[in-house]
Length: 287
Ligand code: PAF
Image (cartoon, rainbow, N blue to C red; front, side):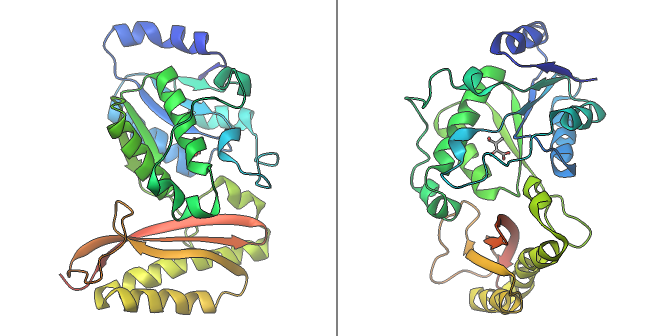
């Protein structure tokens, strides 16, 4: 059984003795609607902290949703989430109300993600990464974890949280865990449950596009982009937002990419009314 706590005080009290005993605290922040992808983050966090306390937060953060986005319909499934947490050895589930996290609304102080917050997803979702970094900073302050695990599926988010932890000296190890996929390649996401069967089939174009780019990447950036675009042309149900190849820290690729350069392909697209994202690592040119 995982213990459910909803207030800052309960959370602090539940952790204080174990923290004093020198145990490492592991943390997996989530917005709930937990699936196997989240479960893999819990498993990873457990290997990081051994027998130390493992905390999962379940909080649908209003600050990271823009006007017209899916804040109201975002799935809220706390009972099922508690079962997933219990099955994966989570000690504490922190599921606060909005005013527990944001005693004043809107918050007067927020975290500026810098220039990386307005490219890729940040270009389509203004303010999104300010919302993400602000809530993660608050949750880090409340949980005070030694290690926090995030999915590589939200790759830009992971890069920005790593930067925040380093630049603001937060003293947390930020670990990125590999994306979990369905056998047919679809990256697990809480938003997949919005897809009807036809849209679910259309959504496979995202992972196919990334795989095509990765397979063609040894022949250069142009070949990778051509292969990816060919996949997308064959996917009429997919309304592309962006498809980009960038360096692993999200910096643009140089004009002349040395053979063997590690890069990341990122894609975002709308399938029906559902916005999906995915990404894959790739190596450009023959090493
Ligand atoms: O990835 C998510 O689920 C959210 O963006 C996070 C990190 C829990 C912040 O609300």
